[in-house]
Image (cartoon, rainbow, N blue to C red; front, side):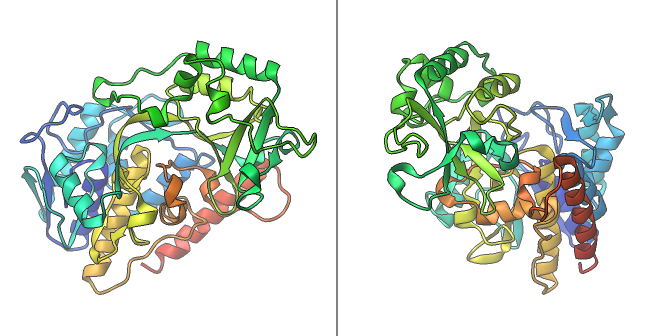
Length: 427
């Protein structure tokens, strides 16, 4: 087991609880990182919250699934919990100390301090966004030079049902591709000018020093492009050429494109809108785009340092190496965003490696569940546009029939819990 973060700790526990002796390698403190302060397992280096515990929230539903599956980290979070409303916020020191004590105290787990530069088999790699250079080289050499990304520029993703489709039109540039691959939000000159003003004046997020990244000219934050000139976006991601509005027959002054993020068309990506704006500013500014006034943001935009795999292009359905079914990957390295998502993939990787060693095939929850929906995204997302994803209801199979938003979400939660329980019965 390589990596003693959230995913690695969860995976090690899952394997040990199923009767396997586990060697867990953690390179700290022998090889420090720019983010961590201690040598403890599962140290949280960013937020101190695991987000909502409410079932009506995607993160709450995922937690319920992982608790049922036997998570060891979520009970540790309960012990370290601090007031945070409906969010599972924790005291960082107490949380990592609790995880450290549980993992190191397990009679079947041996923790070894030092860097690993080779891929283990049987084993699990869960080294996260700060994967060491030598191990990253080994991964790239094994999975392909294009398998691993080191720079995460994420555009917001919106829920289809929250868009005002009366103000949008479906069209691919120059009519290429399928007609419903893209939705287009047209802007006249006045709307565009007001949007540029709001974008330039918006407040940016300033992260940790270790998270600082240079801007790449081919992937600039949308607000940085706007600062370089008022027409820059009109000749970049908001270029109207080849996208005439079928209602007028003319090209708009500018256009914002939304690209389908999933096969069912429940999630739509704001093309070219990678951003460092703070979350409230993203909501305020991007909601001024025609058709997006009431948009539900399933994923916020961001730009930060990150190492992650292009999972749809390089990994098997169970997040295994395609040439070795006993080599699993887990955590943020696979392209999930968030603490609960990371430990969830670690837990399932541990369970599936145990199954593999017992001569059983890996098993994935159905895509009607939150954990299963995440795995489907990692398996089926378009490799050409793959970006990390967090838990959201857009990942789940839609509910048939005409229902109000709250009713649809409640139905998805009920179905997810029922089908997750049925899937667990077959483990």
